Amino acid sequence: MADESIDIRVTPAPGDSSVKVVSLVGSLEARSISAINQVVLPLIETGHVRLVFDCTELRYVTSPALGILINYFKKTQARGGDTKFFGLEENILEIFRIVGLARTFDIHPTLDAALGAFRRA
Image 1 (tube, rainbow, N blue to C red):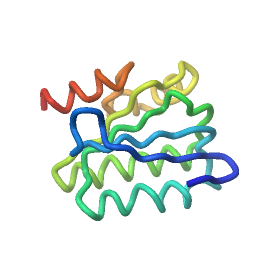
Image 2 (cartoon, one colour):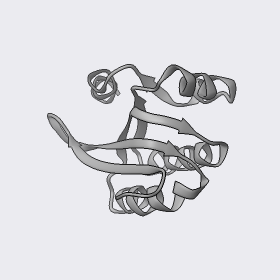
Image 3 (cartoon, rainbow, N blue to C red):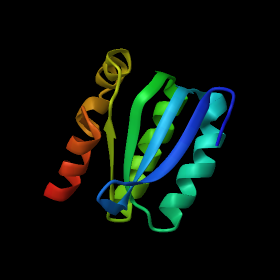
């Protein structure tokens, strides 16, 4: 799904179709919250609660968008799942650190590392 600022793609994780990879391309801003909700909330509501956010092509994130990521994290955990992140650029990772999300979210350098964390859980 495309928006002025974000492109969102969902694919099954390689080797584990119970995990969905949500790729975020562009900027995650207040104006893109509706677009990402239209993709991610139906996943969670239909029982896909093991999500990995691919942030390798995410260039910018705003405070309201961080709030929506927290919402997904809480919703997946409430349903017995989890949310993981990988591929954060250093500037975005620094924002996560400043607001304390680096301690809350399970952040990994690669998709393989994020999927490995699901296998260990």
